[in-house]
Length: 511
Image (tube, rainbow, N blue to C red; front, side, top):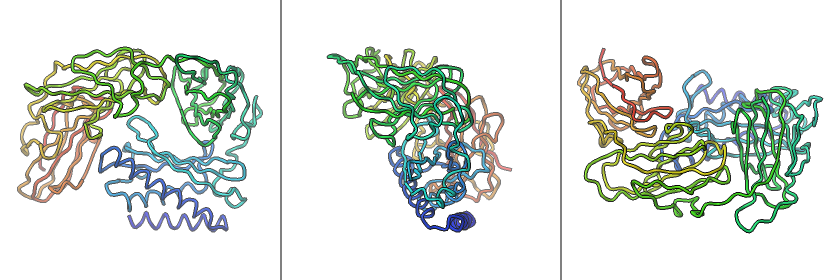
C-alpha cells in the first residue's frame, strides 16, 4: 500500500509541474474525496461491508487524459485508506470488480467538467456519482484534455461534440444522415419539447431513439439542464438505443449519442416522438412505503413500467410456514426485467435478471420462517417500457440438506479431507456459509466442482477476509489455496451471473 501512495504523490507532483498550477491537484483531490464518500454511501445503502473496487482511467471523448494515471493512483489510495472493507483492484488483475469508478472529462464553455460515476457492475447501473469543475486555462487544458480528443470531423452536423454545439431539433423530428466518425465521437442534440399534446388521461412521454447498424448509446440530460442526467440506454433493440421520459412542455432536453464503449463507429439515424402512456392503476408504487400487496400464489397483471426508468414495488407477507420451502418471484412479458428482493429492513437479499427466459426474471429464495418480503421490479438498464405480469408461487424444487446457511451464524460444518458436499445455489443472491476447524498448520485447498459459476471467500474466526477467488478451479469453479495456522475458518460460497437452482460440490483438503 505504501508503494501505491508514493506512486500517487509522484504522479500528482508531475501533473502540477507540467501544468505550472495547483488547480489541477486541487480539482483531482476534490473529486477523489467526493467519489470516496459516494462509494461508502453505496456500501451502506446496499447493506454490505466488503466489496472490490476498480478505478478506471479518466477519458475525454474515449481517450485517456494526461492526468488519468494521477487520478487513478490517488483515488485507489484514498479508497484503500478510508473505506473499510474496500479491496482496490489494480489494472494488472483480471478479476471482475463489484464496483467501478468511471470518470469522464467534458469541456463546458470556459471550464472542464470532470464527472465520476460509481457503477454497480452486477447490473451495470450508476448508483452514485460526483462532479467537479475547473477553469479551462491553457495549463489545465494540457492536464485534463487529450490532444485531439474533441477534434471534429467533417460529417453532417459537425462540429457537435459539445453541448454548446448541439444540433437543434423538435420533439417530433427525424434526422436520417448522421455518423459516429471515429472512436470516441459524440454527437449532441438539443431537443425542444414544442407542440406537446394535451391529454386528460395518461401522461405524455418523450421518446428519443436511434436506428441503423451502428451500436449506439444515448445519454439524456435535462430538462433545461445539460448536466442533469435523467436517462441512458444501450441496447433497446439490435444495438440501437432508446430513452423515454415524461415531458415538460416548452423545455429543452439534451441528448448525447455515442458508440457503445466509445468504440463503435458508423452511420445512424435519430428520431424523436411523443406518445401517451396509460399509467397503471397501482401507481404510485415507486417506493417501499407505497408497495402493492401481493399474496403467495397470486398472478398479478395490469402493471406497467412507464417511463423506462420506472420501478414497481410489491410487499409479500408469508405468515404461515408448515415447513421450509422455496418461493419463486417470476415476471412474464416482453420486457427485459430485473427483480430485486429485500427484507423488511430494506436490505437487499437477492436479485435476478434473465433466469425466467426471454428477458424475464425468476428469483428463488428459501423461506424458513414467517417473513415479509419487498420486491422491486424494473427494466434492465432502463431499456424499455410497457406491461408485464408478476407471479409469486411456491417452487417445487427442494432446498439442499444444509439450508438455512445464509449467515455465518448458521454455517454448516465441513470436514477436512472428506468427500465433497453436494449443495445448491437457489438463486443469484443465495450464499452458502461453511465452517471448518484446522488442527495443525497446513496448506488448505477449498474448491468447488460442477457446472455452477461459483465464487469463494475465506475468513478467519473473526470473519476477517483472508482470500477470495472466482475461476482458479476447473472451468468456472473457484479454488483457494492458502497456508493456514491452526484455528477455525469460514467459507462463503456464492454464485455469479444468474445461477438459479444450480447444484455444485465443495470440498476442503490439506496438502
